[in-house]
Length: 251
Length: 148
Image (tube, rainbow over all chains, first blue to last red; front, side, top):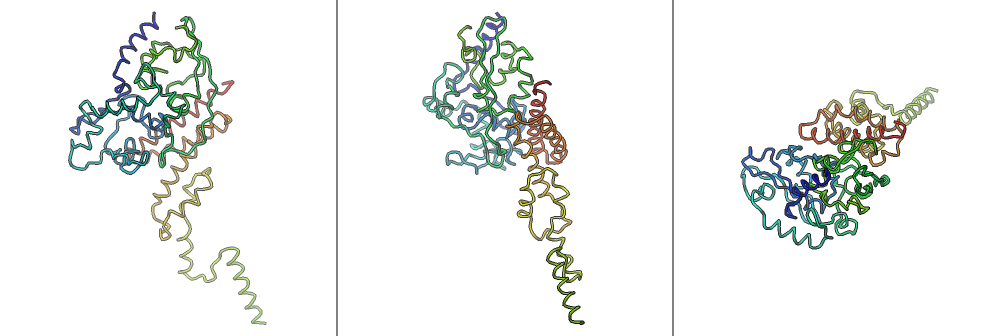
């Protein structure tokens, strides 16, 4: 029952339009500057960069609005400005500069991020992008894991001048998380799949400060945004997609 | 005889100059050029365990005319970042280190923290968080070792 209740709540949360799944509204200082909040689309960025790059190397917190990004920081080449500096390129195209305006506010450049209105361009872009990707039934309808493993996307993990050059990660072994007393199949956790996107520091110890098997966690906690729920249900596929984790078939 | 002594003295002076870097002429002008070319502050600020590439890169970026007493902001900047990158580049391999090696890395994180705290506000915020994530992971790995 507890699992069902959690899944119901999670389902209610995860019925956002596919292009809006993973969308974050950043509203620390925008109003003070007379601007709309920033609408950040995870799908645009995760198609190009790993989670680790932004959440470790660039330093974005995992919780919404916890980073307190300022225009001054962006201008110095930190946070959004690490890439959005008008110099760095992606696929040979210059990435537009963030917070580059000096005097004129509320101009078109600002509205690329401080975008109060529903963007039809964004929707169209998402649709054309998603059509080329492996499908999934939940979240934003894209199987990101398959997209990465099949080479449809090649998320960049190193940003010159920002990232530390490191040897390739040696992923730890997969392990089984038993679903004790629930009758559901055990979860086979793949370190390898997660390490591709996250490295080590995204998950340990902030999200999982635990020794394997030392702490029990429930679907209710996940639904509240703890443990797996820090990413799953927000950006990674939602927890209503039970069989993605409970692979044994018993739900 | 006098010429022989003179020749010996000149030969000795040349030998000393070649092997020990002693100036041939010890007047004020030539003596002053010696410290100007030596990176006087670098050895004092460089971490003991910094990689061997640090000394090679520092003189290349420092202008030759910088006086020995000038504030070493550029060098300091290089030093903390080199140390930061050297420590935190090891997180990928952290599981393969011994507890002693991991503790040494944690100690280096703690030693580096005050230097990052001196940076300006935004840079400080970003790099303190990055250092903390790196340190926390190293501590996590120590605590995850069998027998802990």
